[in-house]
Length: 113
Length: 115
Image (cartoon, rainbow over the protein chains, first blue to last red):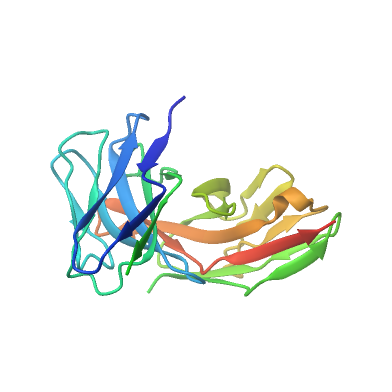
């Protein structure tokens, strides 16, 4: 079955540590996205990538970094510079840059203490 | 700027009741409109969409009509079930930076259906 996988589902880190969240898709989609979800809020766009080896900042990119070395993979690193990293992180992909539906992964809940 | 406003929850209904979740939007141009559903601890699933004015999206008994004159996309279901309990997000998609289209979400509405 095609879809998006995110791992792990739950992640715990100490403050000051960088942590990388995995996102893999086998939908052959060109575009991939990272969103952050906080309680009682909608999703906010962190980074997006339209094609391999290219990515752009979203609305809240500070303290985050990404790479897109393969079409299937779009890992997100939460750095120690991110002031409030505890959140639910969702990865999504879409087949192109038109008004295409975005498909979401199951999410990773990151807790930093 | 572009934005989505949803009614605040939680919305608590008895099984078989009629559901309406209000959603209004502000956008330049002609956005596409979406309803996503999020079950506890999971990612988002597309519930329905509409890409132009007067389009009606429908799925699993849910419906929403794209009303340009009132800038609204209200979600309705005639008879809710306990399994419909989830958070519902209204979203619009518009051009972002001229290249990639961006989803803009409302804050979500929690629906709790009691047996």
